Image (cartoon, rainbow, N blue to C red):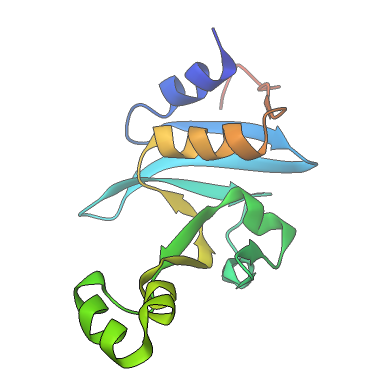
Amino acid sequence: MDKWKEIKERLKHLGGRVDLLADGHTLSLTKAHDGKKIFVMVYVDGTVNFEWTKTEDGKPVHPQGRFWRPMKRAAYRKKDYAALKRGWGKKEADRMVTPRVVGVVPNFGTEGAAVAHLKKHFPDLEIKVDEVADGF
């Protein structure tokens, strides 16, 4: 089985978990919920540090932020475009309604989104093999 399909399969159900090795870091992907939404959390070296959410020019400041989902937001909504164009001109209005990366967050909406991000940025990652198979 392809490693990407195996990651998706392990995260298929709520509570699913997979441990990965990428760029010298251990990633733990866990499918969880908060009462309303189901999502995939990404823990880097076993933790989530919200200091890692910072970005500069669309790139994460901390190397651990590379494993997280880029969050894009625009300064103004598209429905305000006509008023912005009248006040600031077309070029500036286009810039104001174009989404830009404002931070990175440690969750993905689906396992497919998490796998697509990891596949694009870390094609050589490995699935961590469990050393202890007998359990507790």
